[in-house]
Length: 304
Image (cartoon, rainbow, N blue to C red; front, side, top):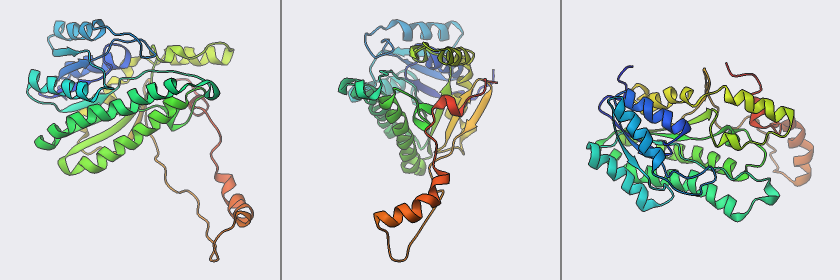
């Protein structure tokens, strides 16, 4: 192992299982002291257990690393401040925040409840804001810091039955970009990772049709450990010139995602009416319309 995070202190949320666990283990192996945050709940956000976070801490310590466990919920602003303060109290500073924690409440839109909506938004968007906001004063004071926020192709492209998750994960893109813009003057970076990996959240995908079964088998080949190197890189000084970007990691493939920019333009010197929009704009733009695709349609090949 190298020492890309030597002397750094990293907070990883949702680090008790899956992708978060692999990130915490690699960060520790790369020299970081790690705050392992995990509420220990189920995939839909219910329940609570200190076990998952404590197990990861024990694993890190057994390998000679430094780590502490935290069982707070990122949805509570006071708890978010507490987990950041725990990093400072335990290890003297905080250098990177990896916002990975998440839940799923998949429902087709007409069956999605207000609780399904607000619960997912509260974890993925409000929670990421809470932890980021708690870390920012420390980053500002020390004139350095890195955020890595987890987004999803569910938000970047689309998926069925995930209006809450799609909205939250696309919102994370905006949050990350805002942090990158506002905090760059303090040498603070903020980037996003869209992971392709089998996890207990992905395990909730329906497998009723042959196509769905094939998709799940393809995802199972993409292990959580494959996501950790890109995440650790972005948290480290190796990525000191990388800010405001959206990356993807899919087994041994890495992606840089586009960000919305105008792709076509039309103008009329006398302005527009609904009728001239239909007659002029629509035929000019229509060939450039995006198809109504899902993530699986865009990433249709087997992981490499």
